[in-house]
Length: 310
Image (cartoon, rainbow, N blue to C red; front, side, top):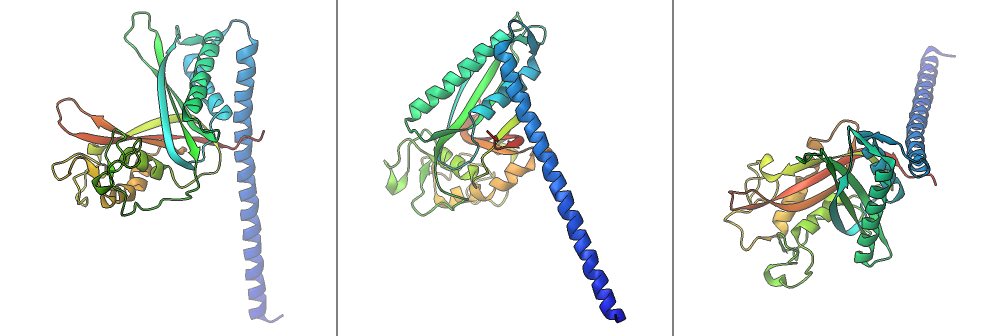
C-alpha cells in the first residue's frame, strides 16, 4: 500500500473509531438520563402508595411539597405548550405542618383539594380536549402564632392548538393591554375575553415541546423595570410599561412584536442551572405610589422528567 493511501486509510479508521466512541457515549448518556427519569417516577408512585396505605405517620414538610407537586404533575400535567389560549387558576390552602413535618392525613386532604381544583378548572373550560400544563406548589410562611403555613397552588392549562412556533403579530393584532377587553382601534369589540397578556402568554409558550412532566419547580418573576433598554421605540423597557405615548393602553402589532423579540433573552437570562423552561404567565402588575401599570412575567423552570412510560 502506498504511503499516501495508507495515511488516508488510517485517517478514515480514526474517524470511524471517534464516531463509534461518541455514539457509545451518547447511548450511555441516554441510558443514564432514562434511569434518572425512571427512578424519579418510581419514587412518586411509591409515595402515592405510602400516602394512602399508611395509618398515621408524617414526613418533612419540604420533602412532602416536592413529592406532592411531582405526583400531581406526573398524574395530571401534560406539558406540551400547544395551546390556543393558556388559562391559569390559583388558590391558597392550609399547609398544617408542625415542627417542620406534615402528616400523611393532611397530605391526603391537600391532594384531594388540588385534584378538585383541577377538575373544576376543566369543567369551567367546558372543552373535553382540555389538558393541564403545570401544577405548581409553593409553601408560604405566615405570621400566625401557631406557625401554620399556607401553600399557594397554581394550575395552568388549556385547549390544544396546532401552532408549532412563534408567529409574528399581524396587522390586525391591536390588543388592549389587560382586563380581557379584546382588540382595540378599529377592531374594538372583537375577541372579548382575551387581551395582550393572553396573546403574549400564548406566544411565549411556543414552540411546542415533547409531552413531559416536571419536578422541582421554581418561579422567577421578571418585572418590567428590571429590564431597561434604549432600543424600544414604544417605551423604556423590554417589557410593557404604561407611558404617556400610548393611547388607551392599546398595544399595536409593532409593539407586541418588540416584546416577542425580547422574550428569549428574558427567558434565558436567569434560568437556574440544570433546569428548563416550563411555563409563563403574563399579567398586569401595579406598585402602590406609582400611577402606571406594567407587565410581570412569572416564568417557571423545572427538572424535565420526560413522558410517563405508562
